[in-house]
Image 1 (cartoon, rainbow, N blue to C red):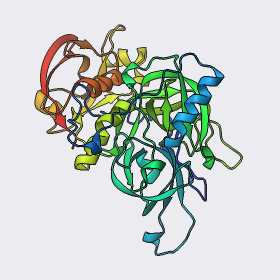
Image 2: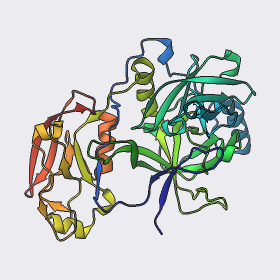
Image 3: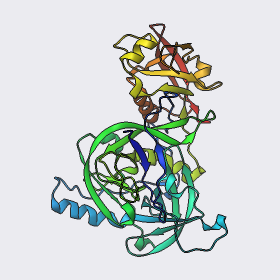
Image 4: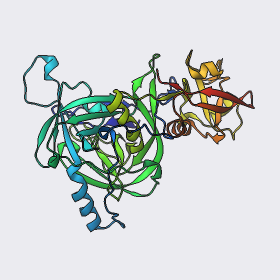
Length: 403
């Protein structure tokens, strides 16, 4: 059976879920490169409105009953329920919402983080606070590439509790995490799990000019139970700091109503992406991402049969370029995509295999995405090391901005 990845927002009336990706796409076996923000230099904080720095909670130490109670007591006031209405465009007047998700406060200026897919297409957005207070939200902007959205509400500060943000670069596989959100509309639900993996890749919400989807990289995988309605809610470490924004699940399990159900494989957007994207949205309505202009072979298809068909040796690892976007930074630098047919349908040999960037090894496509996110920015000069005709070639390239 094919695994399926689903958004975690909840359609309030029909409970229908939007599919992120239906399994492994073998034709074409490629993914467009991620359009992710840099991490070496954070955007300058020029006003209190974009200061995302909040003090951490007290260190909760070992995972005990008392710790979890204390964590929930401190954090839950900052987690909100989001309701969406789209009756304006339909010319109707109704009090019934059409979608539901989660979110959390990030500063004392009224800004709230949620997922792009939670509020996509909404005409009106309502935010409900744990205290019972409610407020209409203004949409400041969205970023389909990272699946993030920034809302703003005007409400008395006593109802608004910003959550402390952690450092997702410090996340390690095996550490305990907590998810708080509104699965199936059950407000303020807390679940506990661990970090299952880091550096995962999913399709983004944005498509290329050729119809392929860009990739969102460096995602956190967790087995903490998250379900439809958890979208946009926080994933927290045991210090009560947000380390991720819950986004999607991969599952073969469904409820009796036909809704996707948790199977222990969930994905969250690292909070360090929020640290970069949110200030850009608040200040400029958008964020500029580093961009190469390549499509790469899906990591799941890098096996001995593929390696042999493409003419590499069994020890070869890297990000194989299947195509180069005309006029892109990769095209201007002279990178090459596959051109010659192989015995495998829709797979062409002759493309460059990226094995390093600025002398740092690249073992797969996901690793290349992670490096672009963490260490590059628009306008930066980098050196790619590629295998071409089984010889290493160094190619200078200037990082561009996503189209």
